[in-house]
Image (tube, rainbow, N blue to C red; front, side, top):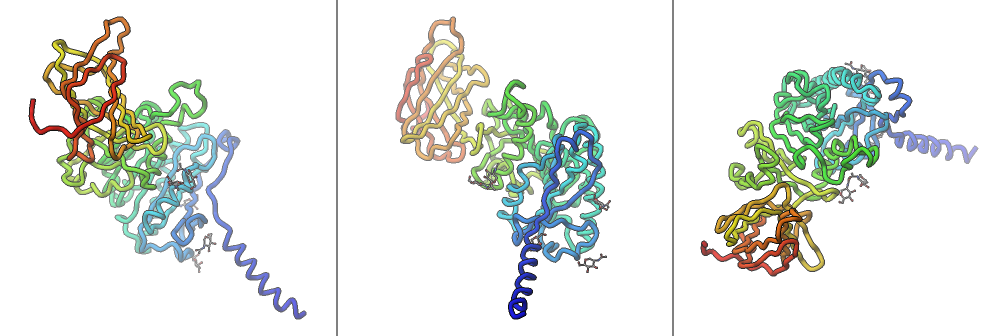
Length: 451
Ligand SMILES: *[C@@H]1O[C@H](CO)[C@@H](O)[C@H](O)[C@H]1NC(C)=O
Ligand SMILES: *[C@@H]1O[C@H](CO)[C@@H](O)[C@H](O)[C@H]1NC(C)=O
Ligand SMILES: *[C@@H]1O[C@H](CO)[C@@H](O)[C@H](O)[C@H]1NC(C)=O
Ligand SMILES: *[C@@H]1O[C@H](CO)[C@@H](O)[C@H](O)[C@H]1NC(C)=O
Ligand SMILES: *[C@@H]1O[C@H](CO)[C@@H](O)[C@H](O)[C@H]1NC(C)=O
């Protein structure tokens, strides 16, 4: 009797604790579901700073049921895409954690796995309109409870990007921001703006393209469109179907990895407005004056820093390159080369920067470069890492033709200018580059005099 008096409340408390710890999870389906097809159902999972790893399934109708869903806070929705196998997206936990780390927001993971899991892609596409209508009704309810549309951010992956667009259009473009991560191409390419995402769907629309030749959308869709590595093939992804299952999705999925990295502030990828990827690689788009002191836009979550100027400039198409794996950022240099050979020389150049044991490499081989006597050839070198202080530089010249006699490139001057730290370019005067032989030297500060 005596013991029970104490035990009963303890058991009740224990039961309470257990109840508190039941988290609502993203729907886990299997290939069987995807094979028979699933009819749509939408679950909204809330995460906040108070409860960052434990999701709460929200009621679609009774918002008062969740005191932790504070509408005075901005709300960010994460909307996934097609789920051919029905498994939960691997990035849900990461994006939630990082969004909450960056800003005190409500993160709502939109789980429409029932509807997206279908071996038939066209069925999933059909469901995007239904998902959008459902989400629109929910956001209208949030608005009735005092939420402002401008504080809402929709992050949509693939088909989720078009869902975001439909929701935005339903709300007359009053949503604050839509971020589209490799918006889906198939069934959307060539359609009218109302049948896909477009820049009128939110006050600000930022888009990343990583797979424009397969699963992604080729044309620009937002106020700013980023084309990572030109938007077609991502470095480190399998080039042929024989490399395994990830061949189909690696490029497409890279968009999420790049965005997560920007949220995690691992490093910054400066993106350059340009008419085409080849113009960008040629180094013809390195001028960032129109953006003032901020410089060219940095890809990712913090692009809102450039919002005002981008809205003024209109649609801006930008390019940046990445490495094969995290950290994905590259470090860019402008390289000016002047030769004194009598004849024109064509070829490729590899530059290495050394600092103690570290080495950064840039290969400029997207096309054969032309070098002409006393004329400055401008190259754009992108290194796989940033070297804070360059002790030595190596250069290698090749013309890629095994039959021609070996050339020498007689360099009168080479100048390397870091794109972020322009004030102290590095130079070297009078070096001879024998074909395919690496030459290493110590760079010196450039002289002001002209040639
Ligand atoms: C949205 O979907 C959920 C679950 O699928 C459903 O309970 C809710 O009634 C739907 N809302 C609207 C407005 O259709
Ligand atoms: C966290 O979420 C769970 C699941 O909805 C809920 O039971 C719990 O009360 C929440 N905890 C806090 C501190 O809000
Ligand atoms: C909404 O939820 C609150 C809190 O759980 C509850 O008191 C109320 O009766 C619910 N309202 C409706 C219409 O279900
Ligand atoms: C953020 O980056 C750090 C280090 O680069 C990594 O250890 C961590 O797992 C990342 N966080 C998330 C949530 O991805
Ligand atoms: C996701 O987060 C986990 C745990 O922090 C981390 O180990 C993993 O590397 C992260 N993945 C990515 C792609 O950032």
